Picture 1 (tube, chains in turn cyan, brown):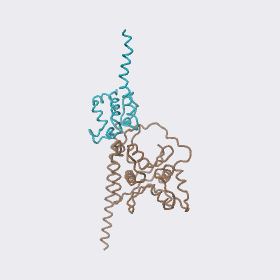
Picture 2 (cartoon, one colour):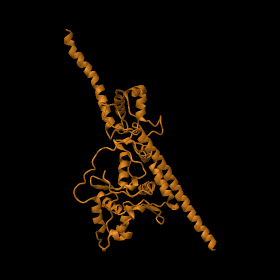
Picture 3 (cartoon, rainbow over the protein chains, first blue to last red):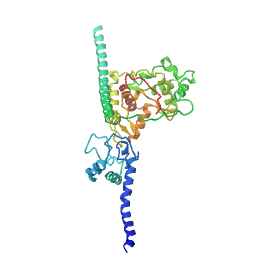
Picture 4 (cartoon, one colour):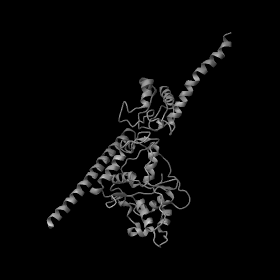
Length: 115
Length: 262
């Protein structure tokens, strides 16, 4: 009886997890695309979370630091970092429409899931 | 009567000297800032030169060889580009861009080439076309290779230098970068797996050779502006010429090293 339910439950769990996984993958894509965020040009990420680079214009990114910031602050930082730090050279991705709101959400998800 | 004239001449000379001093002060301050930034970047994360072979030159003539052919080509009136310059163009490139007090404009090497073509009723060249203008600058600058950059900023040219400096430090475009964001503030750091060059010395090294083509300084600046998400200034525009004037004066005294492969 229990075995009969195991497959549908696993399928349902997978279906629930898929959008989050897809969002994270989309986030990575936006993170590395030169015509989109291209965050990888300035920031290094932990091994296996993205391409290995020597980028050091901005700080190396870690999951613990991103989670410490939290989703709303991270989203706002991506939208317009000049509000918090007027002299930063980080582009205002949302304010200057480099990324759409949904795309900023995807990058935020990717950053929060970093190791 | 002679004394007032002498006084006027002296005042002009002093004004010229003072103005030159202002541009020189700006140059020294920026150079010191870049030097400190390069040292800090090297101390934080020493950049190892990537072990890569120089890109193989494509078969056929080099850009400088193509430029030489254009340089000596006879116009319809029997003259050539070489006839427009002293010593056939030898050693002249190190003093460009120069300020024309009569036109109140900065004159670049490319503009001087087109001026010569215009005088001899020949078709003008596109400022950043690598096949023609790029090749010609590759040859003309090779005739001054090793010569130290000796650009003058007389008092009357100070506003042009200042405009170039202002543009260099102004944030542009969708990405909100200034040229200085990368080449002053972050010189020596790694962007997209490349160490960012400092602003001092950039104007000594053009044109550089990419995929067998000569890329002029203005073509490179246009490429940068495009990547910054900004509409690039036109090649030969006053904005672009002022930028080149400022950038070249930053490299004052550095030996010309054109045609290096990238």
